[in-house]
Length: 441
Image 1 (tube, rainbow, N blue to C red):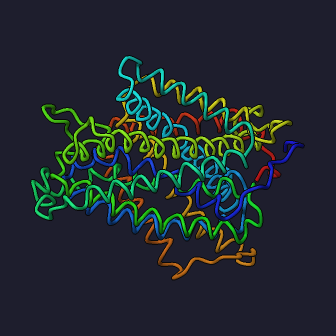
Image 2 (cartoon, one colour; image 1 turned 45 degrees about the vertical axis):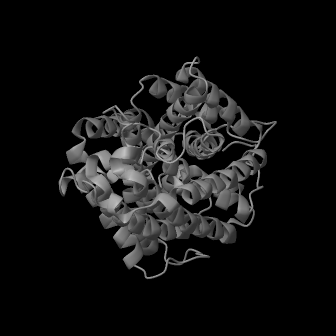
Image 3 (cartoon, helix red, strand yellow; image 1 turned 60 degrees about the vertical axis):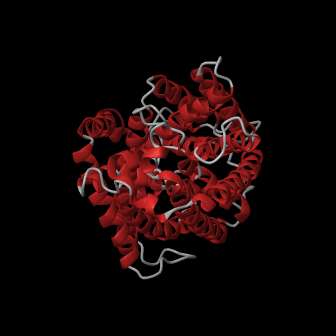
């Protein structure tokens, strides 16, 4: 273990800001691609079940986060409850989620800025964002979390302003326009984009080691964040689609290519693109993307750091910067991998791979939950999930169904995901397993 320890500086309000901030970009872009797959009803049904999964998962995950407040999150719980083999698998799934989600958001940041400054290539903006926000995370967790709190609050205000502009134009008949273009199959195809509404909220657990009184404050942060996000999800979905139907916020007028900017498309049906309010909302809307981008970089750095700290990745990644007491090496490594993914330009595919990683994490985490309850019944659990075993079992069942459905609908991306996990596990078996001591568990 590194001699320099992570700094404990996070309060419940900061955790709420991180929890909402990790996720809030999902309200701004990406989710509308699910409308192309399932239509209004298809995405709504998929989102309904995904909300149930996240609510039950979050409270189950909180029990483990409060009992084992370590930076590795799911990796730590699986390592302790299921052993290092499944612990390694959980860690890889977690790293796939946290490494692949930021480049998708960076692409959206580039696209938003390109709207305002069309002469500058969006990749320049996207890569610049990576460098800036990785640097902010290196400078210190309190500074990073405080910055995250401010931009998260501003991003929420922007969503409320958007709803205030859009809801007067709401017409319930717009929700019924071509509501299920691909029938029931569209529900399952829309799953990854429903997940995108909430992807990465579990990152709160990855900063538990840097939280003041984590046994109490992680619960407050997680609980308040999931309630906020469910309300914002419903509000954004209804107000955006209600303006002119789902196709209006998927396809720009005169185009059949899906857009990454649903809220600007909805606004363009209400006010002129040259209107000061339109430009203001687009500019503030960028903060929602920045909030998630910055927050997931923060959580992902902790996940990679813990992997290196216990020897499952190069130990250089498990070093804490002596000056700033942050996992600088892990943050830089994640940035470099993310930039490579960003350059591919396949936002939808990157989102889907991140969702595969998330579902893998959720499934192993809930199995770990039951294993820890059985293996360590006397472990101090400052918070216990309500309605046990219904909550963790519900989260597990929905996550398994979602993973099967996504594998069926996106076989090539499933192959890429399982290929990464499989090759990584072979590396673990050949090079790491025999060297690992049980003290790493």
